[in-house]
Length: 543
Image (cartoon, rainbow, N blue to C red; front, side, top):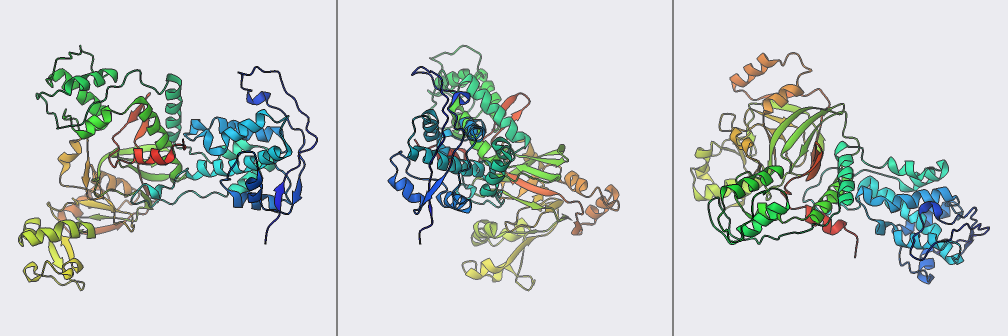
C-alpha cells in the first residue's frame, strides 16, 4: 500500500533580488526571500517524485525518514522561514571547517535552487523543501557519529558509537528556530578536536599545495655513513620541509653527519625511531605532502566524531600511535606516562571500559593468540622451551601437565592453560591494572624498562605496557588509606599475587589519532597501523 507522497505548492512568494554580474556569486544575505510557503498533497510516494523529477536529483540519503517526517506532519512544510533555510545552508557552506564536505549535503543542488528561487518551477521549490530536510538529517548524523563506520576500518572496534535521533532534533530546531545551536550541540568539545579544527583553518589560510615536492624512491635501507644515489633527493626533501639548512650538492651521495642530524630532527618531530636510518617508514613520512597532511587532519577530525562525547569526569586516555597515556580528572591532565602498544600484526584495539581492580605480583596466563602463534610452535621446536621461559602447563581442572607427555601436533595442546608465575622474568612486571573486557587487554608493568627510551614503541602483543605502572596503580588506590606506600611495598616483597579492588570510578579509553596541536604547532605522528590513507579513501567526497 502506498503512503501519501509529498507534493509542495509554494504560494505567496515575495521575491527580493539584487542586480549582480554574471561572474559574482550571491552571498547568503543576498539570496531571495520566501516570506510564506504553503503545502498540498497527492497520493504518491516520495521516491516517485524523484523518479519523475527533471531537476537532476537521483536520490535522497534518508528517503524513509524524510517520508515519515512529513507524513507525521500531515505533509506541512517546515522550512517556511527564511532564517531557518539560510541558517542550515550557511552550515553546509562552512562544513569543511569540521572536516566534512559541501558535496555530501546536496550543497551544489541547494546552491542552484537558492540562486534561482525567483524563477523556480513548483517542482523545483518542492525539491528545495525536501532537500533541506534530507541535508539536515545527514549533516546532524555525520556531526554526531561520523560519516564513516569505524568497524569497516579497524580490525577491532569496541567503543560504542554516539546515538542521535535526527528527526527529533530537527523538530526541536524548527520549533525553537535555531538550526545553528542544534548542530553545535552535536560537535565534539574535546580540546584535541578543537585544535584540529584550528589547524585545518590555518592550513587553508596558507594553502595546502606545496611549491615543490621532491619524491624519494623507496629502496634498500640507508645507514649513516653509507652512500646512495637517493641522498640528493633526501637532502632536497629535507630542505623543502625546513630540516636541512646547508647547501645542496647534487653530486653528493654520502649520507653525512649534517644530513643525519636533519633526518633525526624530522624523526623526532614525527615520533619515529630517532636512529638516522633511512628506511621505509622514515621515507614514507618524508614523502607526505602538505595536501597529505591536510587530509590527515580531516581524517583525525572524523575519528574524534567516532569517540564518546562524554569521556567521564575521571579517565585514562591512551593514544595508541602516540605511545602515550594521560590521566584526566575534571578536565585537568594529572598524569602522563609513556606506553608500549601492540605491533602492526597484533594491534591494540580501540575500545572503552572501566577499571575494576589491580593485581600486584601478577601471574601471566598466556592469551590464545600467543599460545597459538608462539608457545605451541616453540614447544614443537624445543621441548625445553617451557623451562627456558618459566612457563607452566595446566589442564582444565588445574592439574599440572608435564610438557614431555603432550603431543604438540594434536589439537589438545591448544586446550591447556599456559601460565608464567610471578617473578622478575614475568612479562607483566610487578603490577597489572584490569578493566575487564572481551579482548583480554589491560595496562601492565614490564621488566624491559629500557624499551621506553625508544621513540617507536609498538612492541607488545596487544596489551599496553606502562612506564611507572606502579606509580599509576598507587594513584588509582590513593583514596584507600590502608594501601599506602608501606603496605604496597610489603605486598611486593612477599611475592604473593594480590588483587585489590579500585573504588574510584575511572574509565579507560583506547583511542587512535595521528595529529594534534602541541603548543603552537600541529604535530603529526607516525600512522603505525597504516589507517590514515584507508580512512581518507573512504571519507573523501566522490569525484
